[in-house]
Picture 1 (tube, chains in turn cyan, yellow):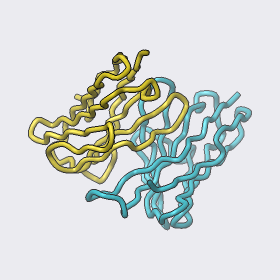
Picture 2: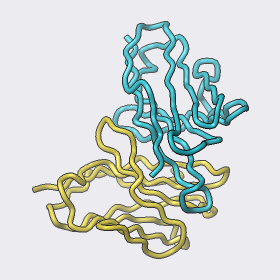
Picture 3: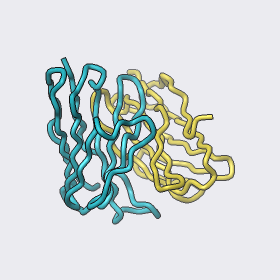
Length: 119
Length: 110
């Protein structure tokens, strides 16, 4: 399947600092990427849809000013957690849709995930 | 009603047996259906996709889709301990958004 790379895989930061997570589609171009958050023993919750060249679309309840998303190219989207606090500690996972894959909407492939711990 | 529902489990099966995982969804307009496997601490990995009614087989995995009944299932034949993981059902509905179920934890016992 398609390859999506995410970096860093884990990060520990102090409360109040900002953290940037990168998501890259390595072998295909993705006009749309998705950012999910997963707390322990819970399912993935979509945070926002990242659109290349335009503003991200945020899900209800997700703070736009806290979770900054930039999708500057067809292969890179970034998520910046601003002024992180301990409650932001979670597993953040990006994904990209490969339209070359089967089905009417392509297939979604995930990055390796980034585990954020805010002290 | 949740958009995508799964039994959280854990579902325990002996090694070599068939594991049957089920999922129901609420949006009748859903077009694409996926099964992901997620090991603890890792991101989901796509196992199967299915788009039309019936069965789709890939190795030890068979996905079954019944749009009239709004359910999709995953069968794992000859279950192995390495199959122990959480299996996430995901459905693409209106707006091209992928919605995940809460996942079913599968334990394959020796």
